[in-house]
Image (tube, rainbow, N blue to C red; front, side):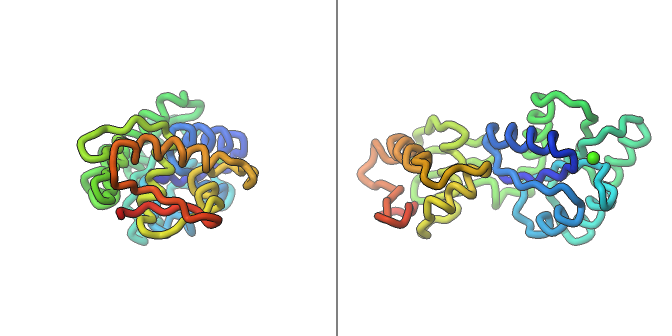
Length: 225
Ligand code: CA
């Protein structure tokens, strides 16, 4: 699942980006409404987290603009504005949930999960991926090969999701580092190879039809046969 985080406070942005990544989400960030609007309209996000006090535009105005241009992803408003009037206004103007600062990380994560679950029926197309007998449920973050439930770490799941979304296409180590490990990692690191190795042991170990293939010197591809 891919989130768009809009926040101009650098320390909150950094903290949340890391926490959400560790929880297994792909996270894009913006610190102005203008940057956020460009990203939001790509239509690739499953939910938005939006601060209201942005330097160039009010967060409510940003939400209204995205909605007007057809964006339907659920929005969690994250704001220091605590009064009942302001919370009601936020929910009436396109927010799906409202969390006041300061907030507890566990509560934020629970609310994001709720938003994603609630919006799941309309997202039906994008919450399940399938390749051969491999099936991924992106809301529950569960992967099954046939009837067998795979025990994957959040990063392994994200890696498998990325390979699945690119079924039949070769992805390079750099592409994987960029999409799955959003925090900058030294490209010389073997983190990708290590995770591919672990993933193979879980996805392909009990089958004569491996799905994850190495393209020597290039990268990896997920495909059947
Ligand atoms: Ca702010």
